[in-house]
Image (cartoon, rainbow, N blue to C red; front, side):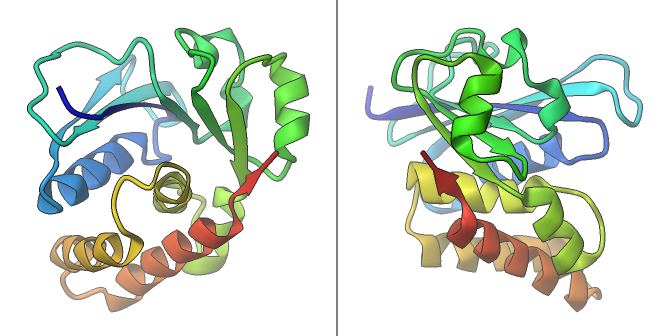
Length: 191
């Protein structure tokens, strides 16, 4: 099997973890990759913890279960930081957190001794870009910068088409999300 990247999203209902995994899967598929993107729900209500998953590969994916040993963990809500977030994380894994704190502060708070930690103020970017605290598209932008799953320009072109299809007559939402992706891509911080 070729290079497989497994991603686990931690968020709360209403923050867009499910949508992030779907948008990323659709973009990676449009770029010619083999993908999976799927959520796991607890109680389906606003604010309840939600998990979503992605697998992206340059060859067929034969695994059909939750991501238990992620290469990347994306945390949309920093109040979820704890043992469940780092469960199964290997020594070279990446943890991306939506927070205003520095990566070093997050590492200390989580007691992480392995992997790389990245932070981005995805909530602040979302509010600035389209007026709502829905951090999913900024988190995708930061994740793309960290993982280099596909070339940025190709990703933006695919994402523009996806967003235009989803929000047909709402150009301000499309442009706001693209702006949020670009800003997070530029502003993500590492240790």
